[in-house]
Length: 193
Image 1 (cartoon, rainbow, N blue to C red):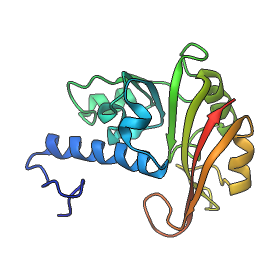
Image 2 (image 1 turned 60 degrees about the vertical axis):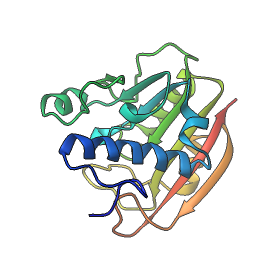
Image 3 (image 1 turned 90 degrees about the horizontal axis):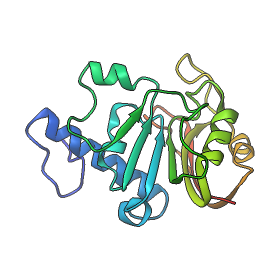
Image 4 (image 1 turned 90 degrees about the vertical axis):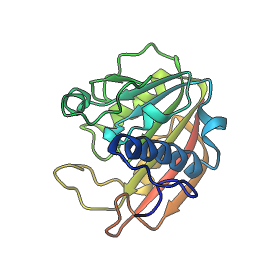
């Protein structure tokens, strides 16, 4: 079994492996943004829109780590969230996030914008909750056909249009979609004006 984190032996138990997967996810997000998890997240208020059960909010070294996840209650009921976590999960969609405007330092949307009901509404909410100068990290598949779980086919230009209210600092097109299977994705680091 390959290590989740290079140089670290895979934990023997399920809970230990879950924590390793979560930490590896935080490192992947930071690396795609050209940074480290401590430079990006430490001491900040961080929101992950659509984290799923991977555990990013649980492993993020933020002062306050929030997962906006409509399936959070189901994940908790089935034991899929990391126990004894400092993270807060809001069981809502990204189209209406119950947080104060300008109260968040960093927002992460990794492999979620094509899963939501209304990507434009999510982008508007992200802009609203981010403080001026706050960081947005987006990683999303582009140019793939819509599916029942990914009802939107986003293009690179379409993603840029969704982020028109932000200053793009970094954009990388990666020739591998989330989950593999062909396709590509774009990773963007942007700043709220």
